[in-house]
Image (tube, rainbow, N blue to C red; front, side, top):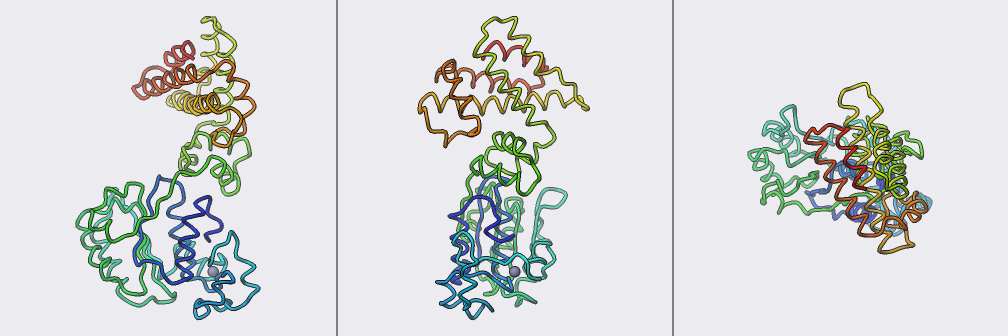
Length: 364
Ligand SMILES: [Zn+2]
């Protein structure tokens, strides 16, 4: 997958593209950040850009030293094809790009945790042996260590020697959501690139474009995903569109109705959907509660800075939420948010979903 097709992270991607174009990419890198935001995809994009047979290059680079590497580097027409201002990007379509994307390129090696959840020294030794020689078919060999924090200490120490004296044609890309779990000696060898959570709008776009979500599903999933596409995909088993509608109905009812009996009626709707699995009811309620928390956080934001909806997780509900601020001022939003948080905790401790829903409806 070329840089231009990765969701978000424009600054980091531009940095990597520039380094690839100018031949200044460090021999080892650590891509750090939350799970499911595109770190591994970025590592693959680097491998593709380094080995693409028909890379797209920008004008500035086309006139510079890249021409030696790129068959089309000197062609001004090629400059017009680079999207998003990247100095170089893979074509995504040549034999090299396609083999890398399939995991079938002999010079792009991936390591990841095995069945026991760790990366063993044997896996690392095998890669170190291969990385000591010139690439077979590509320009650069790229070793991608996914979930690098799972490397056992002996494996990290074995890797360290190679990181200290890498083969000039080899690049090591470590990917981790817990970079501080790596040995300090390894960390110090690998310049760190930080990946933050993605804005909800970027997650929603990616879900729609790459994963077949409808507009409504994508928005609902993105609002509940903490800026992680992977998180959104993992939560797919619950009906997030329904959860989001239920959370919104609940808030609107709580804003209008103070009568406890009628509020408890509303609580029934939260747990009245028997699912195929015993855990489904609990999962569905948890999904409603997480959406509710996200809506309340947005209400809290609107209460202190009315108008701008740019920072909201539920930007598409801006108008609905703004209407609710007459009932939900900053204090009430915060109190309700605290109650939702306690309700989620109770669900995790296996308190019955019905009890949790009843309690919460009286607190909002
Ligand atoms: Zn290509």
